[in-house]
Image 1 (cartoon, one colour):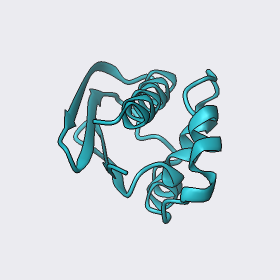
Image 2 (cartoon, rainbow, N blue to C red):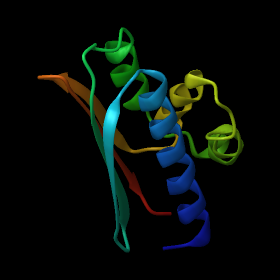
Image 3 (cartoon, rainbow, N blue to C red):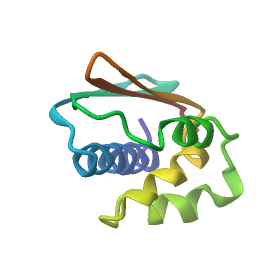
Length: 114
């Protein structure tokens, strides 16, 4: 893994963790899998309430990755305690989803390495 991919994966993970904590998610488990060609992040945790912004977040997370703005967004991502920084994830990942079922909030993101 390139050092730039390592930095981005840390920032994505930070942002997801911050989002989950701010939404009252407990017992959080994060798995980070790094291959030569991609990075996969899966986070799960328990919560009694489905976040109101799930549909919007799923839409944002599946927007096309924007390579021209990627470095700028990467710098912003994870440096704030603002939950809204999760909105930047769509420009940092190639595929993702967030799901709530049976009091379990699950986040998945995949980023193809540069």
